[in-house]
Length: 125
Length: 125
DNA sequence: TATTGACTTAGAGTCGACTCCATATGATAA
DNA sequence: TTATCATATGGAGTCGACTCTAAGTCAATA
Image 1 (tube, protein in one colour):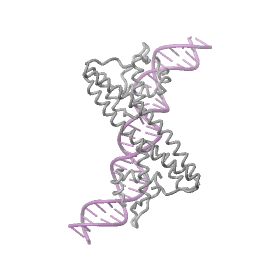
Image 2 (cartoon, helix red, strand yellow):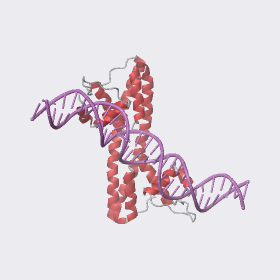
Image 3 (cartoon, rainbow over the protein chains, first blue to last red):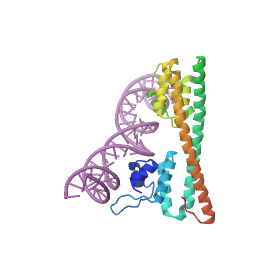
Image 4 (tube, rainbow over the protein chains, first blue to last red):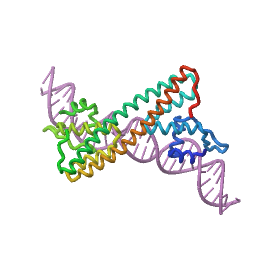
């Protein structure tokens, strides 16, 4: 697959795809004789992973380390697992924060809706 | 309340508290004769709101607008509600993204745990 | 074959959100 | 009163994560 195709498929800019590769967030991509990127199925798997993780805000640094560990081979399986477990913990925390904010938003929106009907906006502790 | 107290209470740096006020993310805080900030209960309410919203990643720009609308008075109630509804929509989307990432993390961690036992790491589509 | 278009790189620029710094002034303890 | 501490301001610096630019190369169409 060309970079244009991958860019469209995953809705990630070509600049970002090159950037991810440059910083080692994904392993080096195969090249054609002319030097152009030729994404394999495996490359696409990495792109998809990167997109998924980044969309949840997992930091780039963690993903670079994960990629580096993977390239080092099977003896890093435990380290990789621990890295993912740690990121999962942080992610759970974030989801909980967001859930709290969601509750607060619901509460405030509800108050505003009532105010629109009654014309009175009570004091919000 | 002094800025030091507020900073400790909400675990937000004094720099950030001043910054939020400067950019209008919260209304201007009362001052003592000497010019020092003297946070009222209402100020604290704004700080708490800011902290909650920011911890969920609601952008600063949206919060500045919300603050400005609030200061304009009761005729902006509908606009404020709509702003919050829009941010709620975006937040829900983010939570869903994170949930997907959570699922993927669980899946991958599970695979690594099995690999630790069996010594075999199967190919991950 | 000439030109257009896709792709390459290195490096600079941008953006959001702080965070730090220098300098000044008000407040408190010795 | 003097020294230290808390706070103030404006502006510069940092950091993460892209995003853009310039200059060059390779590939495909007229």
